[in-house]
Amino acid sequence: MRAVVTGGAGFLGSHLCDKLLAEGWDVLAIDNFTTGRRDNLRPDDKVKLIEDTIVDGALVDRLFAEFKPEVVVHTAASYKDPDAWADAAERWRGLGASHLSVNTMGGGLEGPDAHVARLREAMAAIGPGAGRAA
Image 1 (spheres, rainbow, N blue to C red):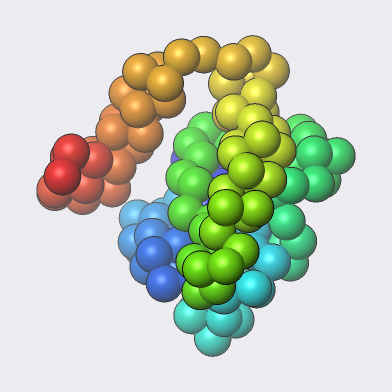
Image 2: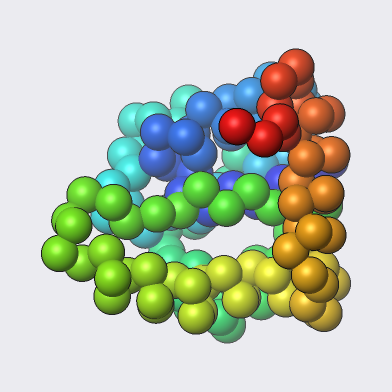
């Protein structure tokens, strides 16, 4: 199985990468290192780290075409500068999430229920308790 983890060098993303790698997955982690850290990711031949942003649609298209992920987990977030939250949220919502959505679903957008169902299936495969609603 192949998974893309956005924010893969962040706290949540790096822990998810560790879990996926322990389960034998190939992982493509994308992080711009605004808040993530390289030392959060343990070295592993099955993880490929891309230092860039998911806002770059051409990059996301190329990475998805080359890596062909079966699962995408979006943990990228900019949270340390409250003054930038509104601008960042709008930019990420409008660009990054749409690039991921189009690529995740094979080039076509589906409703949020389909995204949630696929994410829960993937998280359930990772381990107990994953994918449950809070």
